[in-house]
Length: 141
Image (cartoon, rainbow, N blue to C red):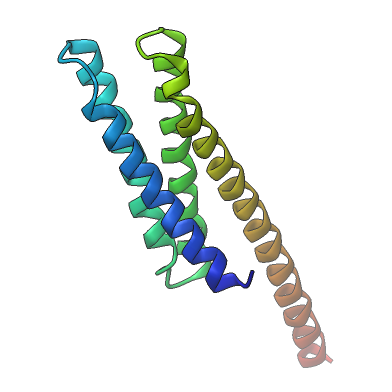
């Protein structure tokens, strides 16, 4: 799978996460606790998808890293609200398994991507520093 295919797959998966979250929340009973948790869950899941879309339009490495960090935060928040539903026994756990598994997997992918981006950025910066040092040394001599 090349980079473009991988990106398309993640765009599809994040949008799918948002849609499945909306479907789940739309089945919630009309009670305050479900409204509050459901609202937060939909916000974070849809934000994960929307912000991942924005990652792919980043104009610089710094912007890419910053937007990817937002995706990770939102995905982690989605996982938090799923865990709240699970641990409070408000929803049957079997209704949350697929959503939780997908959220965890996406979170791992995005976290690894950010770690790789940071490593690549450090290598690039180190290379630039090395070249600048050589240029400065040749100018001084």
